[in-house]
Length: 142
Length: 142
DNA sequence: GTCAGTGCAAACCCTTTGCAGAAAG
DNA sequence: CTTTCTGCAAAGGGTTTGCACTGAC
Image (cartoon, rainbow over all chains, first blue to last red):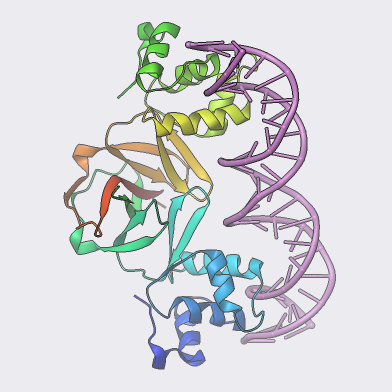
């Protein structure tokens, strides 16, 4: 996981992390990384936009989307797709799964060790696996 | 699974299936069911629209969406969410999982027996499970 | 100086909605 | 007859794009 604690979250460290992932550290990207890499969290693009721009407008919506897609492509964060039109960006890139509460909309981590897939299917000829997404959908008991 | 072979796919049988699932069998719904319940398949709303209206316009886009959501709510079909804005409707309602080929966009069934989840996580307090979605993402080998 | 990155607004895509007319029981 | 369903077109929301400007190296 590429999370940075408070002392690590200096602009210099963040720049180094970005460069290590093949991402040019522009000021906007550093701001976005600062928000995301603070702790394990699930944020929508809109939430990232809001948090980056709390004080004053630092990054535009277009750049938020470009950057989130770039980060995801470089393995800095991970996309979690919940519903049509509900994408979360997960700053925890370790192998893990998710609870999705359909009543509250809340997304919650499921540690890989507590949901064990013990048999993997044979992949179709000529393909390679790029990841497994497991979403356990839950609802509040009536 | 609620699939109907050729001899079963009479309007009367389809109407009976719909009624058994608490769905009023209007002519549009019968047409949509006829397309979906033919075989196990993964269709987008647009594909369903196209197939229902090959000969002549029988069902409008709004009704396609209304009906697909209704069918999914009544357990006649199942939604599979792949990407933001990529929803497929799966006429196979048995417990099973999916391969998603990111290169071709193809969705493929994974039989439940070949992907075994042997340990389930403890659900959060006061919640009940409504389903588990597993998507194995694959890519063509270079 | 050159090329990549950014911001803005418009464009896009898929899905949902409001409402009047049509059909089902 | 009453209620539900359908169709149309318009609205909606989240995301992407085109293009001129800005900033990084």
